[in-house]
Image 1 (tube, rainbow over the protein chains, first blue to last red):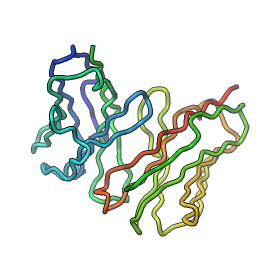
Image 2 (image 1 turned 120 degrees about the vertical axis):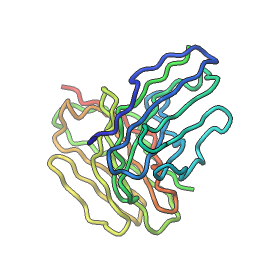
Image 3 (image 1 turned 135 degrees about the horizontal axis):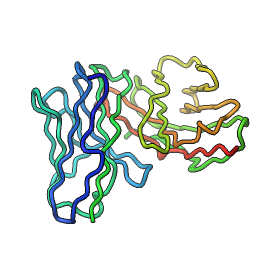
Image 4 (image 1 turned 120 degrees about the horizontal axis):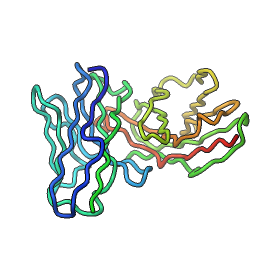
Length: 114
Length: 115
């Protein structure tokens, strides 16, 4: 498609439950990035993929967070044993192939942990 | 490490006033890219502009203009004759190949345009 599609728009989970978020990048885009936005301002980079391969995972909390980008499937970000502090908006972005290209963002998934 | 600082947390002006949003960055990379994004109340991120480190020409797009100065590591954004629809949070961001292409965002500036 011509837009980055993120699902669901909103996700509510009880503390300790699992949460799984999905992202379909723009068709033909090779890179996918995940960001976490807390309290409507600060963005934190989580992980990026080049096609199916992890490109940079320096921002990823290793213990409970995992992510995948498999062929012919939306990319996913999974949080095990969620905590209150995981409440945030998670944005996915994609670029075609070069760092100077602007990242195209999805509308985000708002994750609320109760 | 790369860093982007937007010192202005909130700005409030009356419609039709000009307003400048400041952005200062830090990087050791010689080739890098600077971006501005707009986040309206609806929450999506809207791309506004991209600048590479070798192009210090200022840019104007309608009521928007950008001033890039490598000497002061700044990439400021000016809105002329502001309108209520300009109300949003504006983010400045930086990326580079050495930084694995991820965007490093500033803290954002919440701009409110009052009628």
